[in-house]
Image 1: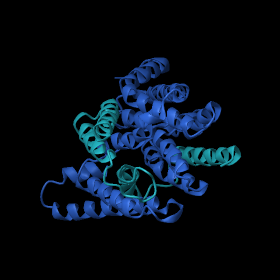
Image 2: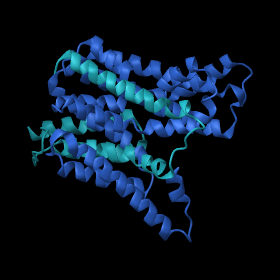
Image 3: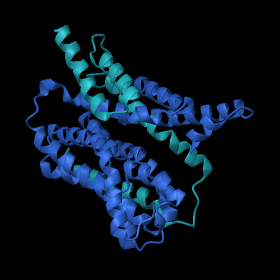
Image 4: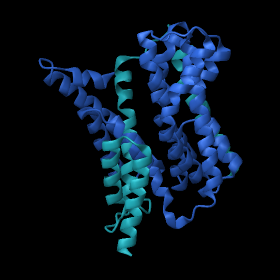
Length: 108
Length: 246
């Protein structure tokens, strides 16, 4: 992809995100957020994040190729448990990577 | 507490944000490293960081670019992830809208999960008094600076990290660390499980439509579970459901 189309893409996301951040601050008092929409928005982060995590863990080589000796699966399970218990980004990243490296060393 | 001057409120806002930085810096480092590993120049990586100012959207965009997704899919996915800012904007608008545009535009640009989380409750309780926007600007500005500097550190670290470290796995791990605190009950758990499973089975759909399909499916699942539980619990305690629906 050319640098120019990358910049165009970044600009599109940047402007779109800015508009969403500004939205209700700018139009305050003229339009109310519909109840169903505000209820639905609560479920956007868990849904989107899970649909990013699961395929990335299950398919280590990208597009839809399941492999059985995949060290990412135990690493992700441990990381999820750590995140649940500690709520700490640092520990989740550190121990998740440690398990990945550990399983790779044992398997090789 | 109420503040006597705007500067005092601003400084207190900065101080309130500092304890959150250990959770932010690793994301920034990972983002910077990923951008460099993808072959982007330091200038372009930082340009992207300033334009996005959204770690999750930026990491997702980087991952999609690595998978060779088309530009439209990258933009749409990043914007879907950022839809939550509409909700934050609606929640903070009553306390910020009266300011002149030379203030509302910059502080809106700097709206983040962290400063929203710090300010939403304090705003509605009214404890900040009339300098509430200054307090908010303190949290937002400190967060912005923390993020930019940690990505910059990642950008300069990036080139020195060997491929064998499999650091790209840090991206799904970061998402996992963001995901887990978002699961606050049966409905959000349902949204995550349904979204995740659809994404796994729909991964071969073209143009990265799998992710969009999965996200919409997960949101619908969350809404359905929420309304089923509301009906089932209408006679019992509904605190749990209500807390989640906020």
